[in-house]
Length: 485
View: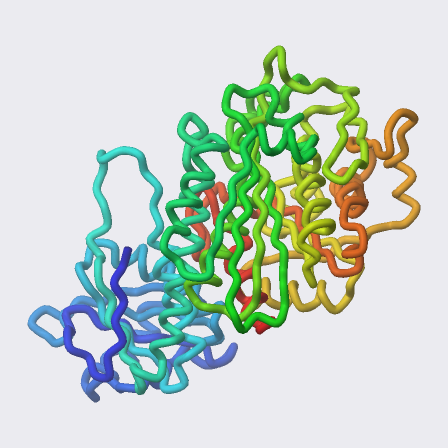
């Protein structure tokens, strides 16, 4: 991972990066005033280059200019758009890709640099992310970035927060990208145990199949019953002494989803290693909160199972008794995520009694049908809670849209043989959310569900995202949790 260092004056000037912004429709782009201005000759040269390079100043534009024998030897003009955190995040990711053949670069930031620094660092660390299980092929040479700011000591906490956020997002990406030939419920639980080891005030409990059966986690057991790799329930608890608010985070953790007996077609199955992205996000966010010492108690629940086809797999039409006693009829074994989440939500409400309850899940393909590939679908009855979480998600550079919970759609959950029908056909993302709501009990008005199947994976490179798992949710959750202290 890149080493990023704050400096007051440039010390290594092989490659100097100067930010550029647009100034209006009828005026050319301009250099952004920086805390340590370049020399007059460099500034004049860079200004003259702007129109010749056909820069607009849009975030992520990069132009390199060689200066043989000069200092710096290379000048990079970097578009930062409006100069807000989002623009700098996009710029940082573009710079990480454009400068991959350099060993180190120096970036000049504006005098008021906190927002710019956070965006730049996250962009650099996320845009340079790679997941590979082979040694073949070249690796980027870029290893160090010096960032020139007016007050390195004062901005050190901003750098630490941005680095932690990016590291945890990268962890969620790693967990999600890992092939399911390696990743099963036991493996995932072991990764959490290793990541949480030796962190003060962080406590871990992992329930295996026997404990799940003894305590009545029928949904997790049903979904995991068809696999040779037994299910788990990870409970990770961050308990700082100064916490005034208790939040429970729940993340869907299906480490591979065949669809079960209601088996998926091959094209729909090939990326089902990502069906635990919700669990990866909430675990990584909790580890990040512990690293940042956020003054809020967080209990994370990750119900983990492999939904496989075998003689012991649960069947369409089975009646499942969930934690707490509610029963559900499932006529589609590919609607499995809500079954494991139901157990975790009921456990949270009955045993943990938090102030707030949030779940993230790669729950339905209908998420992408409604909102495209880059937005999560957010559901809540609490206007303020929904607004606060949406604001944090947006500020962190992620996207979500609030969806309705229509009262009359509850009739689709009716069953002749159980308390609830878990897999009705109409409005699938909405009815899935309504089903989960039935397990929130007294927390119904303090609960948020985010269906994040679509934005959990990227098919292309854009902004700070690379191909594959995005780690969606980690940044938004950490930004929101930081407001609760």
